[in-house]
Image (cartoon, rainbow, N blue to C red; front, side, top):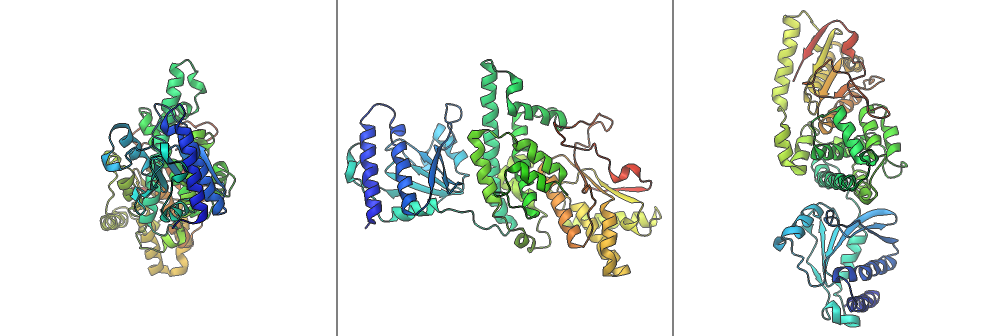
Length: 487
């Protein structure tokens, strides 16, 4: 038996729907306001401040849910409204409905409803069985509309949703990859909207995301299409936020993403500036997606993630791509050399340094600079740091390790084309050096986002107010000695 407040709320919902459906207009639009009022009533019962935010909807962007629901000022979930009597089973969806579901299913807390049937999904999976309201169709039920007792728990579960604490790499990937994919779609939508404005006579230079895409191409990928830019945007924002969490920065209470970038800038200047430049303007109608991404990443508990296996980060990006976009993984060649192979390659390289080049300290020699021209997620550089630390500890004692790896950090150089693996490489190296007691270089590690197949003499440029790529000098620029190219 339903509680009194639910009986009253559903009865009033039925009366409002009957009245709205008796008038002109589309049936789906008619039940939207009554649904808002029903959710507000549930929020009042639970002492929650529930605010539905209407999403922008037009012919080209109709894949977005009807509402983003905030509770206490934080985005908590989404609601997609279908016309009364519509089929809500994803298995039987076709055409536009299937396209819409394919995009929306990535959301971590989503209601699908046609007014009498209510379904709750978490990360594509249904939560419990569908709830069916009784009393007849919405056009005629009116005050006789009723709900089973389970509907109260359904609404409570939806409105009280919070991101689960993230304590492992697998949980991290499962949480952020779908939201990153959703953000990529939002950027593509925004570019399409701006393109329509341009065709209608608006000035191209007044379209903010076209400006960002232009600068992205100018700096990194001259032949990149809109899809490549959207992918780069989404991954950069996601991994910059993850880097911020590794530094203990609480994202939601920092005062906006520009402020997050300012706090992140110490050892991660490139990703910090990228985050600021890419989010200083955010289209209002997909800001909720970034807000939800921020809320989920805030749930990452890095100390517990780090407490996992030795190779905690080894396959982070590879696993991320498996969930985010398996085809992109194949296209970008994001398959990384197994650690066992890397360890043997590092050992053999050091053997050459010692026996052929006269550097008896191997990678620890102050004249040896290590450059990885395609570092991926930094496994080679990470292994070299571990290798030097182990050799120094064996030869000179554990107390000498911090100083040795502090000097080594100044002689490590890595280049990577994609910002996702770049961020993971920076994270892994920073974590390891910190654990070993090293002092990181004041300007950060010598890791750069660039295409090493480009003309090395081409003029380097900067984006807007200063996203530096490989224009800052590296340790190799002023040091005579041996460069061990790895990777």
